[in-house]
Length: 288
Length: 295
Image (cartoon, rainbow over all chains, first blue to last red; front, side, top):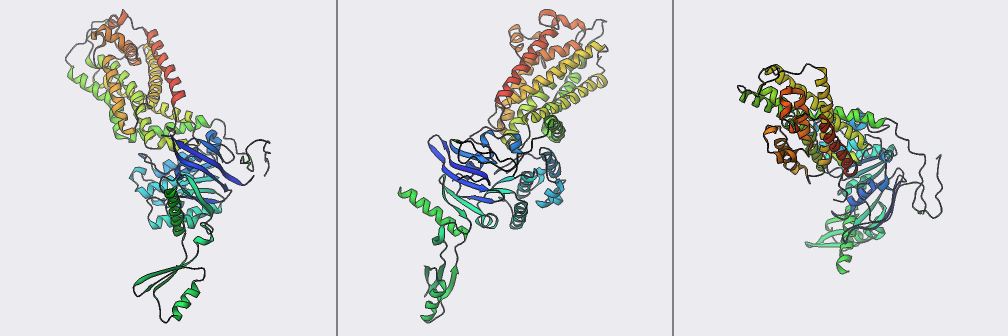
């Protein structure tokens, strides 16, 4: 149970508002240098969890340790080791990108170079532009830059790529991979499953305030959820079968005499697995 | 892997020990960051068009209007028998209004807006000390308030030829009344910023408070002509005392008899304003939060 490598450690975390349980007994660890994704539908409790770990909200029950410290009692030295990219920001931004980053860099004992961080988030051309004049996606990149300027040991990313175009998202992935290579531990929430698959080592899927599955990206959902699907069309009628031996299925089809229409062999993506896990959870809740 | 503490028996199994102790933050950073905040605050203040107009230039505009509109009227005579002009008469009133606007009105709206747009939440996630943030706000009020006072003195003295005091003692009084006023109104602004529930409602909540205070405290209306009950009511609040302190500096001694009790009563100015300062500090100390938790 004792894991000296855990940067974040959560046991039986609970948060209730009145008699509504926003988080209902969540447990997980995030190890040093690991990128952990918290996935789940809107309102599942992702942001509440992350905000408890950031020290913005108080938990109702359970235990939480971030860098070995209870976030309820996190002091400034503790905050100096964290980076936070919050879900929503709307500052008026009467300062330039470069001014804002230089100012925030001063808060930290060992900050990154402002020029390098501006380049890392792809805002070189906007360094001298007022933040209020940036587009939504560019402002979001400023948020990310402010999150990493302090050279955090642990970085919280709460839906960091909302509003990014595909190119900016790829660019952001490169940045995260760079941070990972430097040993930064990352807790990520996102609605983009391809992003989670691309970036994270492990993921937890949260629904209705409960963790419905947790594991490495290629283990989530268990072996059963990864069984390939063979799809084809037979006289215009859609056919589908799940099988661990798709080659044999296709061979059987061919032996039946003719090339099947629209033949596909699909290996479930993280998105398919995620949707199935959430659907399964919702079904269970409906029955219960 | 130097200092791994052994978990005490009975403590939670999930209590983690991490390699290395976190570096202590350097001493004196609160003041250093406070200075950095002042520079940032002053810079952004002057980039914000509406705050420059409604808090910085507002008293100047009013001084201009009053000085022009009542330019032909005499506001009494000084000890040498010279006429007191409108500019001279309204200068102390506008100086005290400037302190209220630059301090209380500006900060209350500014901080309420920063709370609702996520600025404070962002600071709450960084190692910025709350005290450094306060130093920044205080510095902003001090710098902008001083610039405003100098502008008012220039407009009154140069453009309208108002007679400014020449004795060092009068400027000494001006200095302590100014510093006390700036401090008190800055602190009250921070305290009042908790009142508006959103950034959007901030101006609607704060400006009426500031306006009413100005009307009953002898800023726009001649205090000596207000009914006694209203004078007594206004005496609860610090603006009346600021205005009185400023009048003692800029109006001739012939005016002293018009004050309640027939005296400038600088002791009263120091006492009442000082009480508000201390009360405001206590309120700030116990109520200021980066965010409303669990809202």
